[in-house]
Length: 423
Image (cartoon, rainbow, N blue to C red; front, side, top):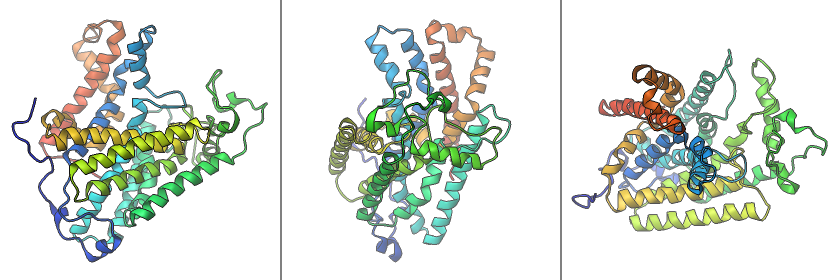
């Protein structure tokens, strides 16, 4: 459906449009005062959160029931995390989520500066926000576990954002050159930490660190990035045991590590740089051109780093090659949203996404805390027959869909009431 008229998708100038303070000018990071928020950013963020809350709609299980179907094999690959190397659509959710944190920061800094907040006040808020995100992540992880005490782990995406956010904030007050150097330095030094970490002996029993039989392990130099025998997993075997635990920490079943926040900070930095680009007073076509070129270049660079054996693509430990490669896909997806919504003016279809994009933290918490309860209550009140209506292969698809619908309706009600949860 084409729009009745071609109208700008940018919102009217707000407080952020006011003249920035002298200190902000000196920082050289705020955009010209006319910059306004892009509707596509909220839609993109909402799409990410809806995809996450869908839990893949159970499509991976449907794919398992159709092993001879090329279509379902493709869908199944992109509806769940890969075992270790590489990545599909489902593996792009967290990079996109963290990238958008960086994209939003220039707007946040500009708005707070326009309200007259000092750097000290803003940095204090950044520290407080980071701490709250980490604590909220620990709470949500504990709520979804069988532990009878606090589960002190920091691999949840909110914890990863919280740990890196104060550093990201400080970089918002540096030049583009310094910001780029920070991202590059993080990825190079993190690569070196893995590359020079000693490998376990040939007779090491990997089952002791949760590596199942026939797991696709790397050989040669790439073995430095194997599951649960790498630099970051070794750090967790020390760090996580500093906290009170029912039993000593030995390994993470999925291979995720606390130190993932270091290279994923680079992902947020790439978002910060993108946010600065989007606030520049240049045409939408020029912005799209730069996003697409950067996206293609990042995909090619990340893939090449993996292909030549420098560093494998592994999302679960956020290898430097993964940080670059995933950013490339995230940039192309963002460009797609901007093209359709901001350039072409097709906005109505994105309303369900925007509703969620304006309340992403609420959506995330509702999904984490209430998914099982909603599924149980839906079955209780409507009966199991509603989930069996398409056949046994599609039971989980309908269950996941019903959960997503209920959560969206709650967020929509909050949108109508103008209730937005912020940290």
